[in-house]
Image 1: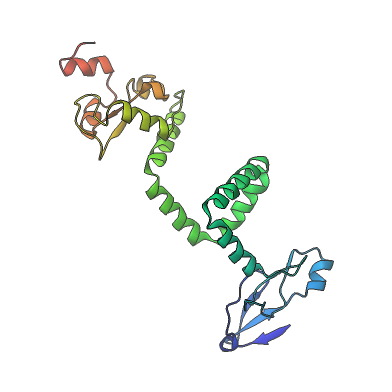
Image 2: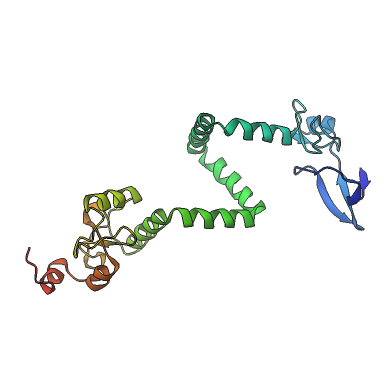
Length: 223
């Protein structure tokens, strides 16, 4: 066990095996030798010594590679788009075939990085509003006992088919639109893509949960 003051550390300390405890204004570092890590079957160890690139970091027990150097090498490798796509595909296949283990690791990471996880969620939601809205519609429909479901891609296709215009008043809805159930869910309508249309906010508010034929009649239209 070695003890040092915070002022004596000229390089950053990385990794979970460098257990840091407040100790009278300094930092107590608990070292884990490679020999002990090997005996206990621990995949990483920490010896307190800088690697050839100056990282005071964990090392992999098997080959003594610096964890931080390995991370930097991975970041360089994934900076190439083709490598990133292949890496993501392998990860997706592993998660699909190891759902229980994947869920466990995700939960652990979320608990260790609560603030970052919260920030990433907020960022994803702001960048994927269509997917968030689609999830919300599907969830509400499921709660109300409606059959069918749809995706954000389904909504995009409907928008394109309508020429990005409201299905009722034909005004442009490129900037803002509402996804409407032609036969309202409250009247037993499906949540599937075949029962969807895209309206401007004003028309959707006016239509509400009305029967589509009755609503058309109030506009002077006949089917």
